[in-house]
Length: 459
Image (cartoon, rainbow, N blue to C red; front, side, top):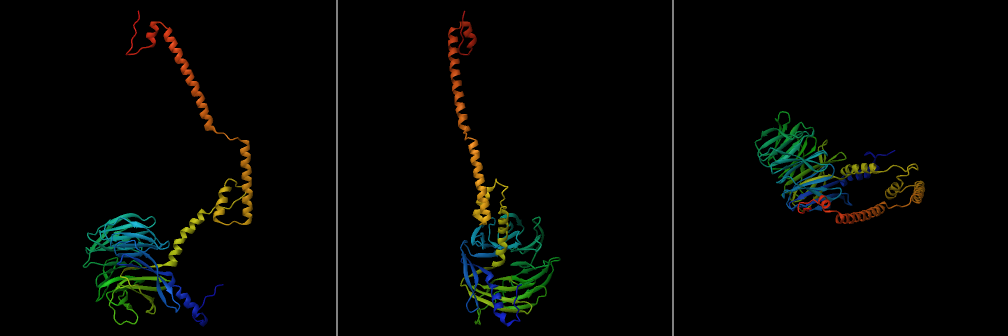
């Protein structure tokens, strides 16, 4: 039986607090900077029970400043930069995988559909569709006449929307790879998102958020702000977090337009706020919603959101002291478990069957494999020794019965004898022919030697 502590038990309050604190240990925060660096941070528990961030890795593979970061479900970090490059990094192995060469401009947006495909939207006016298994480029979608600002994938994976600086909203059929619908919009949209059920899509403009229905493309709700919007992300279902040139992050229900929470990004104890919210990210760990906000001057703040009670608690505040451009979160526990599953399956397929006395042909192979991979029992070792002795005896008997023969040398010797005999015969024939030609009369010489240059006339 497994005993689970309850909150009513006063003895178990410390155990429950430790169990909740372990949630933060499974999160890694990845920051992209203006100084072309990718910085990884892990949450570390202090002695007083509070949390701080500790550097876990640093990546310096880009030349320009970072533009976009995204972590795939299998633990691969995809980064784009102003140097027109897209690089792949394995967060589990902590190594650089490689670079994708297709776009001739800066990639502004990266989107994933489950574990199957990745989409990249670039300033060269194209959207590329990639296969995650081998990172092969499948299709190039061309339809925008200017920079592609963002791309969003429908939850079904068959439909997609993209917005560009040419004030156009394009609908794509990802099954056929063709443009299905095109619509003009009044302003340049900075980003586009789908709701969790796919019934609505959200257009992010400079100072307003527009929620439209997917069926008739009509505007359902509109949220306006007095400051510039820099970043948005969905926290849960229809709850959208909006941040910009203000000290507050708004949590809004996109279907009703109701403001649920207001998060203060300023440093604790400071009344003035001179920065701006540069990027937002949301992650769910063990049923708890966490919102990570980063300012342009390098301040990172983590909130634990309780949407049922409409309460937000500050979990962590950290000063990175770098100029932040983009942010991504990575759940260590889930992605590692998902990444290890294929390796376990492969090891099961490679594992060889048990050794029996009846099968004597594969004894040597199974013995070497079993000694190198596993530690067998004593009985198995005895069986291996007996079988190896039997095989050695059989090989000795075969060697005594059948003498060693070198057929290649024998064939060479036979060939040389025949060659010598042939040469001697040819010499004898030549000598005989010479003797006959000297003894034959003139008419016989004329019949034997008929050439164009030489003609013998005899009387």
